[in-house]
Image 1 (cartoon, rainbow, N blue to C red):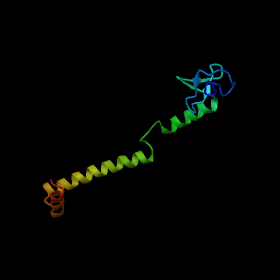
Image 2: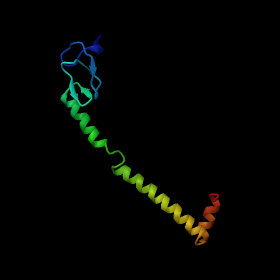
Image 3: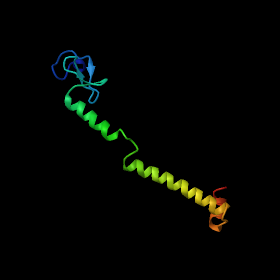
Image 4: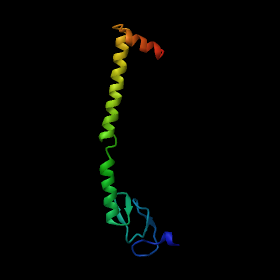
Length: 100
């Protein structure tokens, strides 16, 4: 069966590469931590990917989302204070329209 043949030496494979999922035998496997890879290149690609995306939410898009959330909260607080405390007409009307 072709799907159980090592991609490197064509021996029976008992592992799969963590990156590309190709079959690899115990003799050719490149172990890194608890993961197995078919080549050093696949192991390096996996490490690069994890290094780039490990801090999910800390990149530009993540910071932009956090900023949007903070601004929405501040806007809501400003609207509420403007309507309930300062009695600003625009804020009062806006709160009435949204049912508060």
